[in-house]
Image (tube, rainbow, N blue to C red; front, side, top):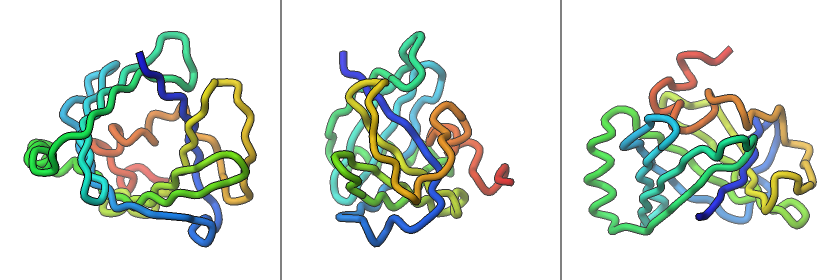
Length: 157
């Protein structure tokens, strides 16, 4: 079984000048019934179907299965997601030996920017850049599946 070990942080400074690439992403959720989440995503001209589930007793890990699917099928699936489709621009930022993916949200989640880092183990150390803010890994409000139902504009401080 494949695991995803990920930590999430709010962003408080300039990361774009350090970015090596960016991608436009549209994603929607076919199921958000915990503990299983099923997502369809279009990133640039590629499409993916992803299934994630929690790992009991783990703070940062989830099971993850991801499959590339035909773009047209992903576009059709997104129609079932209605208004809950998330749009964002993802910036790829290398920091030392690590790569952060920084998501700048659009639409009803405008104003929210989250950096994610995938790790090989839950104890793995990594360099924290100056633009990295508060850690929100375990705050469900910052999960994309939650944001698709309860947009940032409706609960931000």
